[in-house]
Amino acid sequence: IEAEQSRVTAENSRVAAETVRANTEQSRVNAEDSRAKAESSRVTAEQARVSAESARATAEQSRVTAENSRVSAETARATAESSRATAEQQRETNTATAIANTNTATAAANEAAQSITDVEKPISEHIANLQARVEALESLVDNLGEATAKSISVYDTDGFKVGSYPLTVKGTGVPSATTIPEQAGVPAFVGQVYIDTDAKKVYVAADVQDISSWIAIN
Image (tube, rainbow, N blue to C red; front, side, top):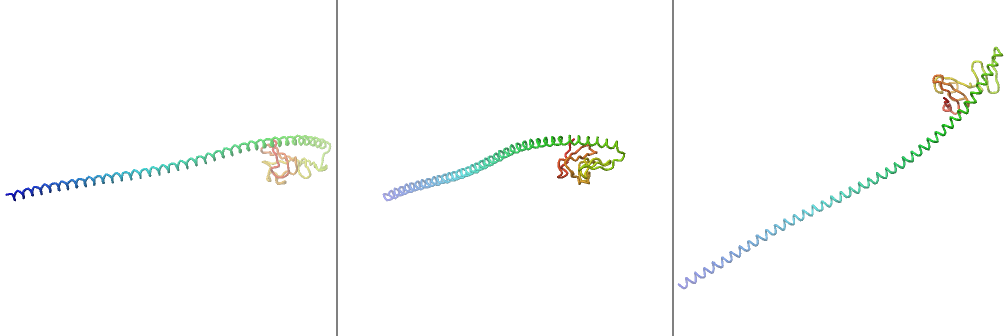
């Protein structure tokens, strides 16, 4: 009987010890599970931190790119402003030059007009005087023929001449090689008169350089 009781007591001790071991193992399993969960949370948190850092780096890169774009735009604006200021200065200079050139051209035109007026009046007076003298001679002589005085020749049909060129030439149109073929359109001497019978315009030779030497006086 005593031996059986000892066996039962020993078995109870063994069962109690096994229970303690099982409880300890369960605690260890629970602790391992908690550790695994904590590690998972740590990994998740680390991944979130890495993602946040990546987002921060991307945002920083975008900020740098935007700043570079702003600087480039500012540089382009400054360049455009400089070009505008230069163009404005050039425009003002050109305007001042144009005004000065206009004033100079106006003064030259006025001077040329005055010169033409100064030439036109004595020519008209000489023509009138010569015409009166020729008419007086013609009234005395039935056939005047040809008379020459120095460089002026008077013909009954060709009018007055300076040397071999008529004092007055006529044509239909502006002075040209076509309207004055015998002189290739160029004045023969200063003061020669050309009459455009089509446009009723009178030109006086201010020079003998070329066709542009003819100056319209009306």
